[in-house]
Length: 413
Image (cartoon, rainbow, N blue to C red; front, side):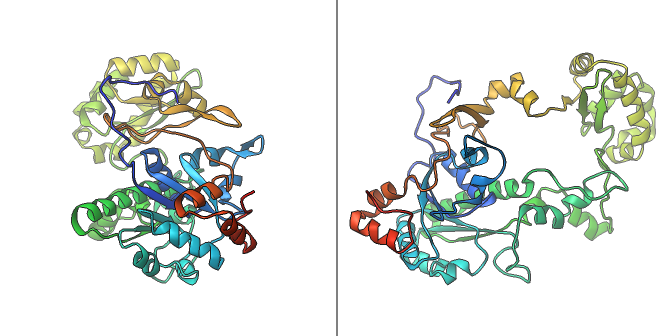
């Protein structure tokens, strides 16, 4: 990993060293939460069906038959193929969970219970276990049994309703936004439960996380505004209902920039820069909400000034004026950007088949106990026999019995 060291001080072990996580979830939110924990030193055992695997292995582009999304999402995880819907496979998982600190799952409510792996069973085996249940709609309520995906959360949370151009259709993001937010929330919830276990009660508990809720939490004050004022936020395109100018603007050479004026002094500096200091004397200019009501007027002033200048000139002028501006990047742009490079936000890792690959680095930097990417996503079931031998003491005969029962892919040779 090409991670630059910014301190010569001795480093401690990763902060989650000694924490064992069983990731039995599929696709995005649950597995990404486990990835975050693994990035900071947790010992993550990824448990998948021994022949089908996690569907994310086949999602998106691949190279040389290897799914690139899995290469990233499966990093820092041991790959164990285990059929949990078989009695033998369920029994093995119980033994693994009895030695674990965290289990993350995202089956529909009732599925684990049907397999004899419900929280009552797992917590009886291991009272210190934290069980994170990540589902579309939570463990109870009228929608609990429905299949749930991030797209549904983006739709139901109010996100799609406020995203898009006025008069246009509601717009969904072209990536797993709700899943990503839910993953970060799940990792935080797990750490909260572990802290409570280790400092207060000594006992584990169940985390019930519905993917429809974390995205709702980041959408701002819509519920309280509706409750108190009856206002339903509408689609405003790239504009904000809270301040203006705030939009994307096209430069003379075809490049695009984005501007934000959430702070009043920044709004004042922007309008002076684009040659319209007179608007600062307007009574409405002193309030972000009132400026938003005059967005057409302000946008025209800013857009006209930017359209007459090339990208480099616009960026230099805004930076000199200490006005908030950013280029509109695609992935190629951001990977070449000096700030991202300085932060090592996209880092280089060696994959045993693909060789050097670049992917997003860990979420945040800790000065004394940093996280890191130790390895990329492993082949399906590649660690099954090793994990079952080392952690459960299974021998060749027992592994052969599991294979015969359809619980694992093959017995030890």
